[in-house]
Amino acid sequence: MGPTDMLRAAAQGSMGPTEMLRATTIARQYFLEGRSKVDIAQEFGISRYKVARILDECLEKGIVRIEIATPTAVDGELSEQLRRTFDLQHVLVIKTTASDAATLRRELGTAAAALLTEVVTEDDILGVSWGRTLHAMARSLTSLAPCSIVQMTGVTGTVSANSADLVRRLAAVSNGPVYPIYAPLVVSDAATAQAILTQPGIAAAVSRFGSITKAAVAVGSWDAEGSQLYPLLEPKTLAALSSEDVAAETCSIPLAEDGTPVDPDLAKRTIGIGFDALRRIPEVIAVAGGESKARAIHTVLNSGLAHSLVVDDRAARRVLALHT
Image: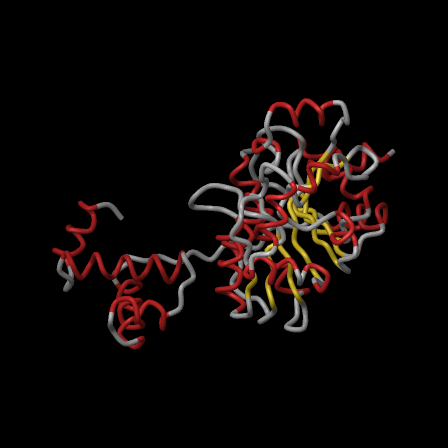
């Protein structure tokens, strides 16, 4: 809502401009940022019951509009074919309704959120990496068991949508303990990485990598658009990796075509879960889509890192074709 719309709404209703500003700020913090009514009440110096009344009024006046998305269609035949081919636990192949990337990420995120709600229990420790599709998953999530949530990679993404923000959104839904990593994804050298890893807050997250029981990870193709790691690397490192024929990236781990990790020196200065620790997690749910990601998805499935998959129908067919 822009300033003109806000003043018009104020003139038509019972709220003055400053009341309207406070109401929209509270609504944004509650519905979009996932803050609790108690926290908002403390910030504004009002009771949580007053916060609840303001939120109700925002809904009544149309300041906040809630849309219920229709369930994303799943291709059962393709899902089962992929599950059997790669011996996976769960597979959801969604029937895409549009070709643009934003819609695809939203639909994949909706399906991934539904799967996460179904399989995660309060006894689980949930690990999450970062990706735009995982961000869409977090935004779609309305219910999650009160499990512990662990950030598995350092901070990447944009100011408004990054890995720390994703973890916070999940925690707001689950109300379970959260272990973020407020550190950059890649640092200059191994010594700096080791120093960062000893910081108490970061050490608390890293120490739980071995206890993660379920994880949601993105799959990246090895290019500036499709990878979270690629744009962060200096030309010298990218040139060295070009000779390795990197086929995919997940949790900021570059993978060769056969699914093995490459460049151990890079791993030493990356803040995040390692290949072996990721491979020991009982269920890793990979979320990715688009035909351009097919090779990367195929590589991650071949690596044995992923046990479940959420993917679109076009990418699914391409992955199966690559496997023949």
